[in-house]
Length: 469
Image (tube, rainbow, N blue to C red; front, top):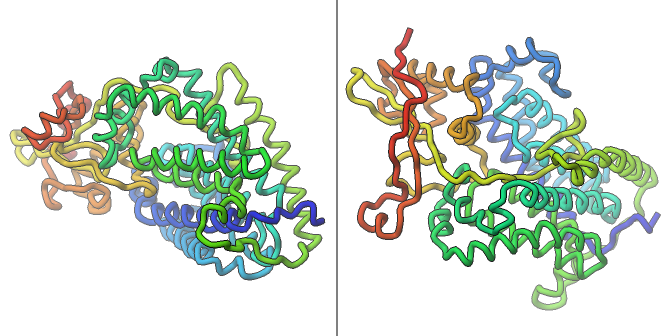
């Protein structure tokens, strides 16, 4: 069925397959480094306890049993398969080989997400799962990319961008009066090295940025479905706006995977037009096997049916943000920053050996030491740092934060490796406490005078001094 072949989208397929696989590699390696401390047998929210108490979880290999060794086996296997896909090796074989590889990534990572509880409760987890599932049906190098699958990726990009745009317009008034960026760069979860400078751009330029964001999210996505070169131009606009977000903040792999899935609308002809010379980017393909066409059509039909719920959500009065409507994390609803916080508060954990002198624990990504410039970590996801931001907003944390303090009192080595600085060099403190501070960016003059990127003041006590039992 040649009419199902998307000739002229080979570059898009290569970027989709290799890019999504690269994000999976990062996600699995993140699990290797962080999962046991946060959710392992002796973690802050132990998976065995969760499995014993909850029946609301989705499909997971760990329903059989959980152990830290099994988790590491799952994560290392996922990382290895993902890196093979990044190198393009399974794509050199028949279509079923990359299909099985991506379905394995999807199943393994879904097993992790479905027991990850609040530490995996981010929209980009379901986004990665949905993208990985779709990537399984892009075929291999020997056959043309299937048009229905590329259209599903475009539909995913549409939901990502248009859904995020609607969330903003329907949500906080600062998106409607164009003042959102007066606050966002300062109050976003994890600023990066450039965020301070973005915050200090002229306010009229901030309004232009917000207006451009609305255009990119509420208008441009419709043009992704147009014939070439219009579809490529729409994809390019989305990619450029996402790169702007990459420059100004740390949002794990959200922006990067949005860039990757948006390439589904980039045609080889449009790419060749901006490259030097006259490159031929589309190879000759073998006929597509009938079995693969049948699989693609079946998956397309499944996704069309599942898309009813996120499509309805786009036009609902109470639009859901980052919601899954099924147990397999397919055809999800997306969106971010429907409301913007105006003030920044941080939870600072301190310890003491004598109850008199208090020393501060420092995290890798979240603001702490006012004189330390924020660092770049995205697309890597510092899960504990992100949860600390939510904790400062008053979004719970009792289930994991008190266990974190207990680990610090015990000077647990694995937990301390999650931090940037242990002020006691491995020695257990006598007491710990958690204080609330108000943070704001320094001005240009304050930075020159003090060398501090942040100005902070104490607000109150979250957890009073607590001793080891």
